[in-house]
View (tube, helix red, strand yellow):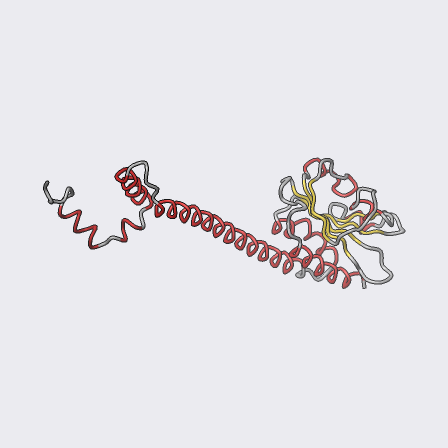
Length: 235
């Protein structure tokens, strides 16, 4: 029986000099393990092979988890930057009307939503000229409208931030844009003691942009900043 190697000398020397090349190649390692199992026969259990298969499965799960964590971190960072940019743009105007108009313009573009609407509860009607000029962003509703809207009239606890999908968007909120809204973020606004609440609504044409399973920390922060900005205008 010849003791000569069955592979070329150059290839053999390359493997001996750099065995890590084979160890790092998953397909090569599978082929070697399979060849070893065939050589041992079907009646012998290779515990090393079983251990390696389990280790590979565990590593695959760890890699998937690693990718998910990185993707979530990147998404969170991108969302944080987006909220910060929207806040900076929102704080730029020095007058109330430009402040509101920017909500439906550049702020909506930064947040990548289809519509931004501000609802203020009031005992007065919406015939005020300023309200009519800003009708594409601002609307006035009777007291109790906001809680009723957020709970679909069922009552109960109202959260500061409500994320949900929408089947038939409310015309009172969205006007002529209601046909396109498929999900929304509803930010309830507290303007301080003695003042009726407000509601800032971010409407999206993507049904998956806002949903109850999503986190609300960033939008809660945005809500707090918006409340403080509004208090400045309300005096």
